[in-house]
Length: 422
Ligand code: NAD
Image 1 (cartoon, rainbow, N blue to C red):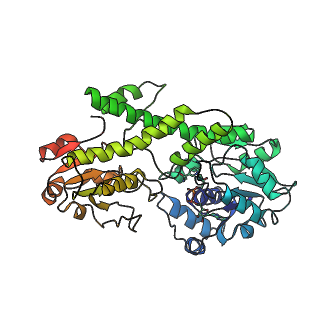
Image 2 (image 1 turned 90 degrees about the horizontal axis):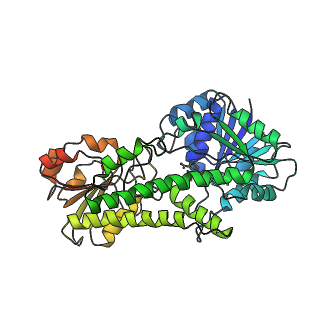
Image 3 (image 1 turned 180 degrees about the horizontal axis):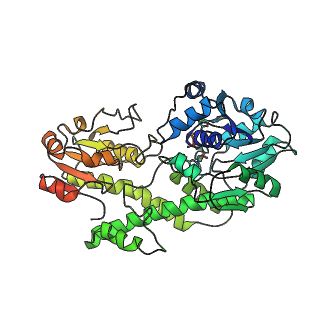
């Protein structure tokens, strides 16, 4: 079993640390956020992620998982150091590597000889080399091992991945990294660092493309009088297409797709290829936020000035508490810019985010509301008392940006219902 340092205790780092300790390794997980480290040391998991609490507690109680402040403290005895720090979008759309570089600078002087540094953060092509330069150690190898987990099912995805990708020019380092996934059954693709880094961006860009494609098809459906629900069903049974990611909605968001799509456009551009297709995907997505806001405006009678809007859902998708780059927040700000008053509820968001102060229950936001908008596909919303909702609202009108609710059932209760692409 290996000694692993995980640098960064966020969605990816904490999942990586907990799962590697579950697989039997000794893991020290570092963060710069002292409060987070203190919480985790007490066994309190600060994010909503199915199964993560239990796995963190299992690691702590078994003595195979600990949390420290500062990357250097974690790396001093590590055979492997996983970098799981943020790579946010820079001003020009490129990925900002400053967190990666500072983590590498911290661990460079203390890493034991023969250690392997692993980039798990999503990093542009060439970053493996960049980390090597910052580390300044010729006795340490840098390997790319991108992460494909989905928030909301991170633990499951880490332990049951579709594939494990390892990018290294050093075969023995690649084999050592592959061996860490003992007990995980998945195809392992060993390739060069540039290809591994590209696989991660290409995968996210392809999924974003599917989302924008189906949102564009939804717009066509609205224009020609087709029902997108049946259209995607008919498409999805084609095995070459598949059902996954063929759901129209308010646009893609979250901490990965928007920044990774932009970063890939930037990477391609810098290398001399104009990735117009992916640029189009981003434009369709930006338009989708506007399209949803326009549906609410139309529902309200053509103007949002003084209109009370009830919003259900703030997270970028269900089963997570993550609101980073959430389409819901983009749409809320478009609505308020146009004069609406918004009251929002989300089962996983309790603290204020941007200018939104979330309510504590889904009904209170409907009181006196002119339009209800569903922006996140939380299952909870399906099973609410819609007679009560209709009574509370000034007028029972719904814009269902997730096609989540039962349209005929709502119409029977007197609601005016508008979905996406139907
Ligand atoms: P996050 O913001 O949730 O967590 C990053 C953590 O790193 C934070 O807790 C931060 O305090 C810590 N940190 C920053 N600098 C540090 C340092 N020098 N030493 C120690 N800790 C430090 O980010 P995330 O969502 O886990 O994403 C991390 C990377 O993984 C990004 O590159 C992202 O693109 C990629 N990724 C994310 C997901 C996802 O679903 N969130 C999936 C696959 C890949």
